[in-house]
View (cartoon, rainbow, N blue to C red):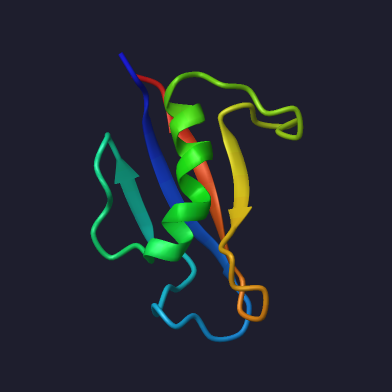
Length: 87
């Protein structure tokens, strides 16, 4: 059974056009979370899918169940923590 994943905004640089703020969270269990920027979701989705199916990332040295990923807006980056929630 795939794991759930939690997406948390950990920082916002500049102005997020979608209005994301630090601390916002979404849980994913196979469908797109309401209110999450579609451009950000496009960047997050490959890693979210990997986390759901127990992938390990070599740069996740402290916590093997979490990684950080930025949205594609280089001038106003929103950084998200993606966390695997073991089922």
